[in-house]
Length: 615
Image (tube, rainbow, N blue to C red; front, side):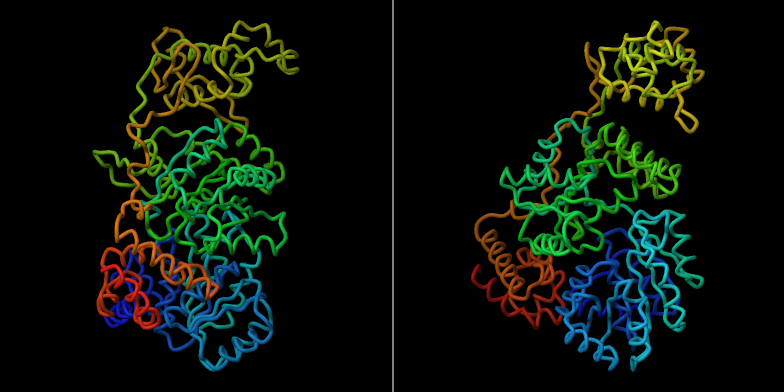
């Protein structure tokens, strides 16, 4: 086992240019190298690829990587070749002559890592090629393994065929990788991929470099613009619920002269591919997209992810915000939500295979959006992870922790109105109906039920519909009411009944003045005073800034010449380390993060020449 560790550490340093493993990487590598099927749940940006790339260089034969997207395969292969590793991808983007050359290399045993799609792996032709290789298939890695589960947020039927192919290579060890997996999804991965007594490794879901922020959607376009301006000249993704919304927001931002394109299933394959490539290669800054965009995107320098509309589940939300800050630098996740978003999602439940499951997933998302407690703790708790309690709030964690607490205020009168209305309606309705009665709605069902004659009809016009919903949530959180059953009927608890009967004062964390309730915690300081690493260039001046820009421009030109994204040459973390360490020779260059032997030999002299101009 010590030999495995020593060899793995040597490869990590000399090939990839990293000094140490991230949590669980070496444990996963040891598991694979000792022949154990392995399930690894690691956050996006947690270093999953190292877990199979290093074993691939230690095995005598070939490692097959099942990957869902062409762009991801191309990026991974480009990065591996840049590091001196023989790697190929097999997909429809290859010209016939390239395909034949790739097949020959595979069969001759010249390749260490081969990427294939799940659809491609299922074909008889691909299986025949693998059987005809002159060296064994030592490892089969399944990336985005949650796609094998119908409980996963991105189920793909083609993933169900992988187990049948794996059975043809019984000596190959199997590694399943995913960034998000609830216990149910983990069970499905093991079962549907037929993993043999797998070792399971679950890394922390805590992405400490991502600042979590949630805002009620009030003036959505200006809220988006405000976030973009905080990250001017940085890459970001904006997710919308519908294609129509994507197109409208893209046009609005283009008219304001932002560097932006759209992405959704309504575009042609060619247009989607073109837009994605422009984003990956930093030709445009912002991608506005539906959930069709992003899985497998390997772009490490996405600095912000905005959800213009609420996602359907916390799994989907976590996967999408994970596309920010893959390089470990400070990034930002902003969620905008409204009651309208919730209604839109529920409208599509009638088409869902399991509406009850869909509602359960949505409730997790709603609870997160409306939480008044640390968002990171709530998000991690959903995935079964609990942070150790801390005496001090981490102000770089989320908007709640970065804000002064909302003081308790006297909400006795509106709370009494709400609970009285629940009683008058004989505890037979949900929040929406109770609110309609309080607002004096003349909807047909209210008039037909005679509820316009109740003493509580129309007595709540000092608050709007959304504010009454917020108050309802607060009354639930503080134990005055509960909702139960399929239709979320409201009932008063004993505490609620006592408070109503005894005219108890009800203090809640709302700011309540005359005509309105305000439910937004007030920042103690500008939220982004804390996020300096993500805008590293802003901290530089003089020759250091000139050097930073010179290396960045050279990297961009080299990437354009090679038709690859700039991060394939090296990431922003390496760029910053070059400026900080200012290496003067190859030995010092090899101490820079992300510069291995092959990369130093290939482009080191050019980097050192640029640096020498700024001594």
